[in-house]
Image 1 (tube, helix red, strand yellow):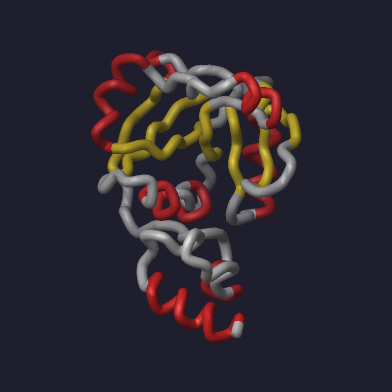
Image 2 (spheres, helix red, strand yellow):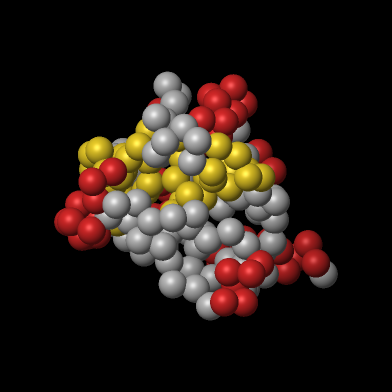
Length: 169
């Protein structure tokens, strides 16, 4: 049984411990377009790859992230792939083996069911500066868009917007 980690807000830890991880409530038109479920990553020996989403998820507004560790059966079907690409239907064991082999940043697994409280193995605090921001390899590739909309509320956004406007002119 592979172990998975879901990154969550520390303020939700007591609720998760009591009730587990629930499926998000989404409109039917969204459910028809993309897989719906609990986002997680297989826990592998490389700690950084297993917990790579911490910094990106903290942009949603919570200050302290925790890891919710749970186990699912090997044969559990999950959707897996890179975050901005089409997901493939794999078993949980195959998804864990793929991440162990490839060590790919931006990988995500969507488990298409709720995780019961009895399946939660542990909830642990995590290092808060782990992972990448914006997208994997963002520092090597640079900012993909400097417009006012894309840079709203980001660090050093005024400087980025000015450089973007100068290059566009």
